[in-house]
Length: 100
Image (cartoon, rainbow, N blue to C red; front, side, top):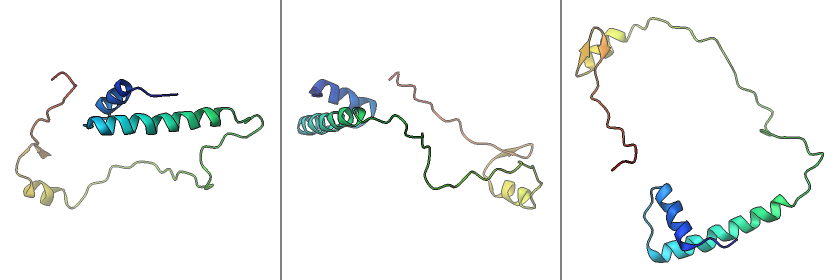
């Protein structure tokens, strides 16, 4: 599957990276090779193969969350530049939703 330069450019935009024209061409070729390999893998017969989520045999350790009073609370609040009613005040964060 040959990826076009325009498609490579769109992928770069979605990844928020700037590519030179030479990089666009190189990445279009490289991604095309990867996609062709994926076609080969899709042809492999996997019937009867058990699904595998991970191979280490490890499991998540889950414990109950408990809220506990910390002896550091007052010291940490005192070190912070701004607080109100025992809570830290931070400046608002600008959220970029892509509408520039």
